[in-house]
Amino acid sequence: MSVVAERAEVFAALGDPNRLRILDHLTRAPASATALVEDLEITRQAVAKHLRVLEGAGLVEAARAGREVRFELRPAQVERAARWLDDVAVGWERRLAAVKRVAES
Amino acid sequence: MSVVAERAEVFAALGDPNRLRILDHLTRAPASATALVEDLEITRQAVAKHLRVLEGAGLVEAARAGREVRFELRPAQVERAARWLDDVAVGWERRLAAVKRVAES
DNA sequence: CACATGTGCAACCAAGGGGTTGCTCCCGAC
DNA sequence: GTCGGGAGCAACCCCTTGGTTGCACATGTG
Image (cartoon, rainbow over all chains, first blue to last red):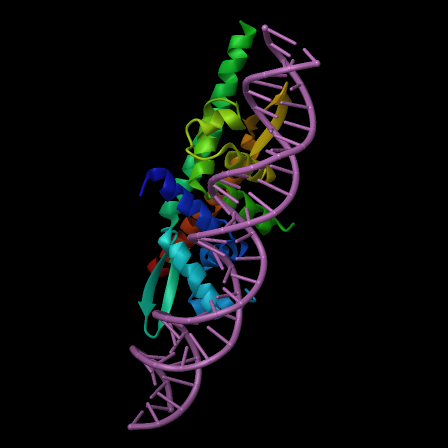
């Protein structure tokens, strides 16, 4: 998969309110799908689908613990996405500065 | 719109390869829809749709210049998204550190 | 004015995505 | 062994979305 497609997958995974809520919850503590259902008003299967999307994007990792599956955050991808966004913003700022320099000369 | 829905909208806007390419292009220079068609292999109308999505998320701003419409990057939203991702990652690290402290005591 | 070029709008299509229900399967507890 | 709760699979539904084509509108230029 191309690098841009990979990035798009990560952002697309972040592009759903319920998935953001799940991520937020996982920031505080790992949890299973059924545990997450409590504060989401959707079915366990829907939660499971969201978790598979997050896992597919590398944002989350599943670990079997007895009869339940515990999901944990994987900050590496989160950081990569953040860094890319920073690069975009910084690149823009630099371009603006260059334009300003030209205008002043 | 709730804050989480807003964030989701921004990330969803970032969640498409063609839109990422558009953003990347706009990082280097502002451009019109027809100008962007050149390196995207899709129709101008499709590009226009993408631009409206990006504009809706506040990532881009349109400015009429004569008979063409020039689109410019708006780094504020990009930075906000980056900061939120940083917070998620940092929150996770802090939690990990806390767990480690407990384990060591 | 006439013409070309860049936009805008609308209808339409195929595919994907979020969500549900219903069932089976697995595993720990008793 | 049996039972209950968590997880997995599959089918289905509806709405959104990325993309197209076709046309009308506006605006700078000859």
